[in-house]
Amino acid sequence: MEGRIKTFLPSKAYGFIEGDDGKSYFFHMQDFKPATARIKENLFVAFEETATPKGYRAKNVELIGGQIEYQEIFDGFRTSRKGKPNGTDVLFSAMVAVGDKDLDLAKRELAYMANRFGCNAVLNIVYSKETRSKGNYRYSYHNFTGECVVMSQKRFTRNRQLADQKNREVNERLQQVDANYREYLEEERRKQRMKSLVLMVGAGVILAFILISQLR
Image 1 (cartoon, one colour):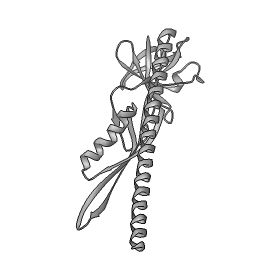
Image 2: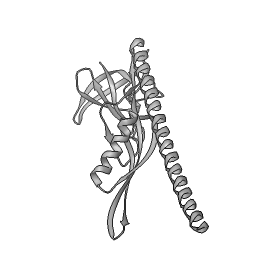
Image 3: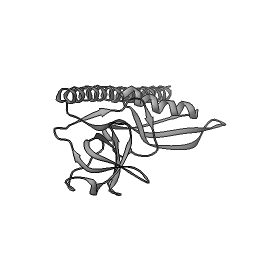
């Protein structure tokens, strides 16, 4: 029978194969031929299916030749306080920091930033709260930092055209994400220059007022 390695835990030296029959087969590294085979999730394998009191098990597992590796970007959007899940790759990463008096708005702003870049996840999210004041008014201010990423997973196929197409799609996605991020950085630089200009003009007005007052 043939199937695909669905999960593999190197530290435990075992995993599970999803057979073409839809069943899940347990395997141990010792079940591979040769035992030195480089085992990765999503690789296609051929094996002998057996039944045990604990469930189905794969024996005499062999990697199927001619497999081509490609990257596939996850659909949907994910958030996590932790780093990338096992078996995934980060193809783009950018740290962002947002804040707002409204907790929900601050959360949405973090997701908005990631979507603006074209990322599909925010990882390593850190939350903090501080007390600010304006005159006699005191209020809570909610801060979030996070790593906006494009997260993918290695896949394998025996179809060269499919692998090339998938890799082109990933490269085009990354180019767009990089362009979006550069545009954001340029907007931030323009805002900073404008703030500096306003401060300079304000300082000039105050200085001129002082000089005029002294001349009187």
